[in-house]
Amino acid sequence: MARNRFDDNLREHLRASQAADSALALCVRDWRAGIAPAHPAWHTAPAQRTAFDGLAAYEPVPSWPGSARPPHCVIEAVGPDSLEGPESDEQARAYRITARGFGALESTQAWLELTIARESGRERQAWRRILSAPTTN
Image 1 (cartoon, rainbow, N blue to C red):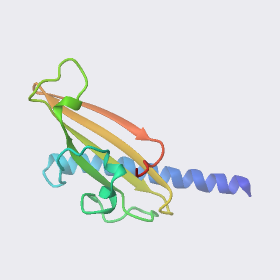
Image 2 (tube, rainbow, N blue to C red):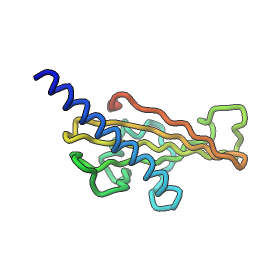
Image 3 (tube, one colour):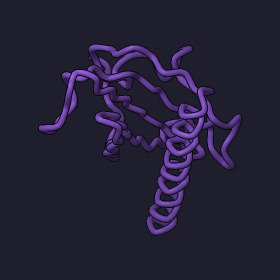
Image 4 (tube, one colour):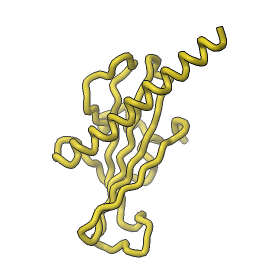
C-alpha cells in the first residue's frame, strides 16, 4: 500500500512538473509574440504575493490533462540593477517568468522560473526549479 501511495505521489509530481515546464515554454512564446502581459518590476517575488491567484497570472492553456487547475505564469520586468555579470549596462532589460503547474490535487504543485536578459544585442537565459512553494510573509 505504501508503494502505491509513493507511485501516485511521483506520478502527480511529474504531472505538475510537466505542466509547469510547458507553461513556462508557452508563456515565453506568448510573451515574445506580445500576447502574454509583462508587469513592471515588483519589490518582492511574484509568488510571495497574490499575483498567481489574481489578474496578474497568465494562463497559456485553458486546462491541463488530469490537473486540478490550468498551469499559469507571471511575467515581470526586472530592473537592470538586478542583472548579474560584468557586461550589464544601463540599456539592459530583463524579465522574470515564473510558472506554476498542478497535479490532480491543487496542493501538488511544481514551480519553475526563467530569467531572460537582453543586453548589447544579445540575450541570456537562466532558469531554476523552485523546490517548494514560496510562502507569504
